[in-house]
Length: 142
Image (cartoon, rainbow, N blue to C red; front, side):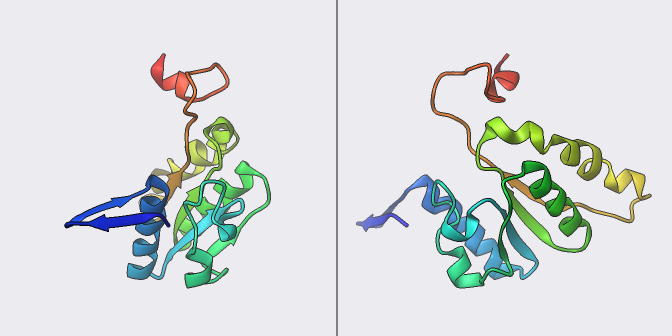
């Protein structure tokens, strides 16, 4: 993590802030788990750096390269009482997770007559480049 501090001011990178917030949530609640590609190694942007060292690989879970699998695991985990933080590496691949998110997670409470909840967080990043047709940001901006 990159943190500097002087005269009462604290500067921290965005990635370090994300990792810190996830770590705080995991310390406060043992049901919070992180699920995604390469998350035990810190992920491609170091937003999960140090979490596997602190919480172990039972709470920080690497998955295969399959956004559909990641979202399916997260939905099932949430319905079973865990609180997953689901990490999709790039927003460009979010459509591969949408079936589980739109048709399972979003409807579970209603379709179960209120018996199920799906408490989960989806975390991803968007490109810094101008909007391009291949990015899902174009959907929101258009």
